Length: 238
Image (cartoon, rainbow, N blue to C red; front, side, top):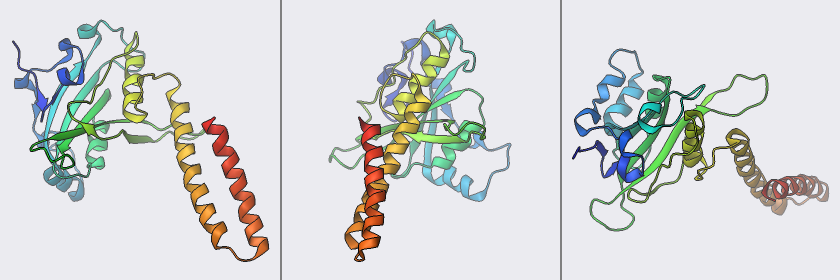
């Protein structure tokens, strides 16, 4: 039986991906230096590679040939990359840099030690992807790193959905960004989620400002803004 590549306790098989996508252990380990040896990078980024990243492993490769999923018009293969980190903070610049060096989609499975449950050597992981952030029409779309929520390494799954790699990629992104498998209308749903977060922050600030305001005119002005923000938030959450 083939031994598959792993990042800590996480592999393509523990994630629930098809066995055909799993990378053999002998081919999975990727030296950190290979990502930046031939391209100039800042001393800060190199330090993050060196200090914050423990190891990098290619866990899986999703292609039409090994899944039976049809090729996409934009996405032709998806790499599942395990990144074992030192400490609690995700080196976001490292992930963004790695993603920028490859034309295909990458799902990052970031693994770290967990100290929250008291179990020796317990691990947790988080899914992350880089994709063009939805924005206004006519504006250049910026690539953004999205991350999900930390969970026990043994519980995190990555499920394939869709008849083509385009749909499979959107589903993987939905799982990383929103925690759901449905990748339909993903950009609109990300915009809605981000708008809700912004409005909640705005409402909380306006509530504090209204409580502190003394002058009636100022209180009325703040309350009008607060009422508008609450109404918009209610509409989005309906």
